[in-house]
Length: 256
Length: 75
Image (tube, rainbow over all chains, first blue to last red; front, side, top):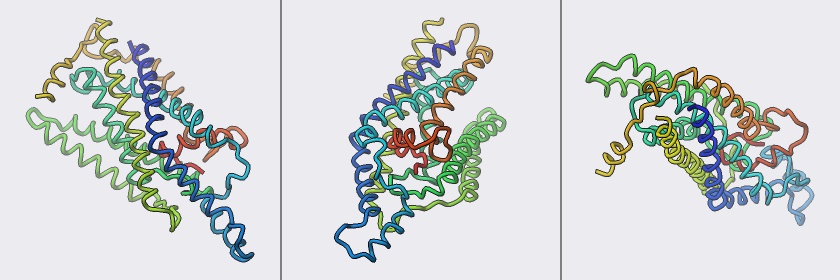
């Protein structure tokens, strides 16, 4: 049973990755191209300028991105095509697989929901816990934003934020289960929300603040990139929730 | 109306021999699946960023756009 679900979870993740790639090609890649254009205009000194600004410019731009694309290791076309779809497919298969395992554990244990409803609810919850809440503290950043020296700190902080959000949700669910009394389930759920928000809020205060957006980075571009990025992940999770729900229903019906 | 139809048409389907999938059935797949998933996610999110198992920047540049769009710190 779990084997069949795991297999379908990974497939749903790959399907979601393909649709997310299409969405990203349409809405996110134009923003990435614009951000790279900004990056290049700030890292390469203008040829017609005087010697003095030429020396000053690379230093300033070097802070944002120390390695301009002088040796193009991977072409933009590959990054937008094979690279993007490979990255999404690996990520989709991975999170789809974990998703199906959580589904296998939670089905019948977290309420008696039908398979399609439970899958969609679980996907929506994951989207909020893993994408939306961590992005409030550490929003997605386009190319040209982020210093190379701090990548280790930023990676640790970002994964820490995701772990905090998931951990807080598990604690909140436990507290809700312990506190639930017959007829007072609503109050227990509210308490669970308060516990989640409290833990996440405290964690956000304690985790380091990171702001590496260059002062003259276009605000509209940053906004558009972030919306496109969140939209891309929404496509991924919506597909996982819907496709996996359908396939899980088939597996469960056949097993009876 | 539509909401209640969506919820009630999708009835709970009992699992053979009970209401839940037994943990013994989940455990080995959970270990295997999680291990594979962690490796995949590591290469998409972190390799040649905060950590490098391989020399160079090829993996980083190859998954570059995906990494940015999935929110992982890049560069």
